[in-house]
Length: 223
Image 1 (cartoon, rainbow, N blue to C red):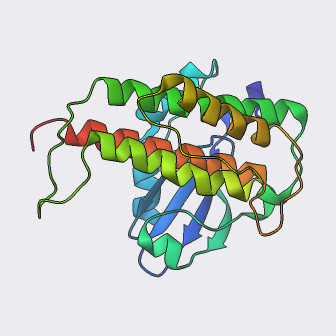
Image 2: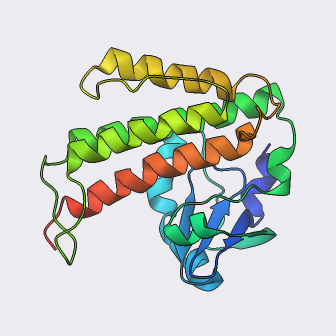
């Protein structure tokens, strides 16, 4: 759990090393996670995302360390996999297998919830049709929202929770869907079967929501 002293220390990060891509993830800040072709570029991308992530932290009622965002301390290198190279963090750090205290669980659940709030805010302000990629690819806004909700069904199963995908237009259903996930993140720390420890689950869920929120932001403006 970060303390006042941590505002003056380098930000602890994990590096997940694939053969084609590296992810850098802030240990204590679920969702602050970016990738690059190598370690240096991944850390540069993480630093560049600090201002965007600060909006999530503020939404959760917290504050980022006051030191320069680019001051990082790599505390663990995690072997990557095909998932890493495909474009998603998939390696579980040793520290992420440790049990959470009640305070830690509540804090990370707050950051996951804040990530969803930021995602919803971006979606609400975005056009329905987004700018396409260089080859005309990329989902439009509503398809991205459906994709994020669909992915969360699999994430929830990794926490031992089975959910049905809500209609993205039904705000009450989406809120109930998310509440079930937050309950799981705040619940027992034991991994369910081949599931995920809550620390990793929070990191992956928040990363996915924010990755697509920032994609929507970037593709809402002319190229």
